[in-house]
Image (cartoon, rainbow, N blue to C red):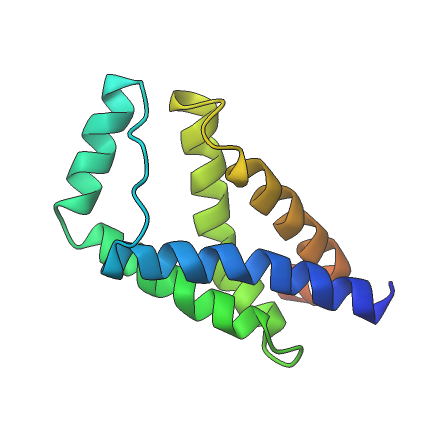
Length: 125
């Protein structure tokens, strides 16, 4: 795989997570609430507890790790549960959403594909 393409994809994946992670602390961009009442209750509970801050720290840390080729695997690994939960949340409660979740999921899938040897080594105990 072309190293330049891989680097561009990693940066494109890292930026939204860094920006939206910082947004959870600073609050510079308002996010519209989902239409589903269950999703609203979930997000209300998440943002009224420690969970939103933990997710934000994970998003920012993983995004920064993705920016370096040396630490990209660790960043991708940390971001995997976050990306999976975002995709499941939108599939279950807010399917159209804002569409960014689809882009980040596809970008993350590409990053995982480019690092498939490292993931296979991790899974072959």
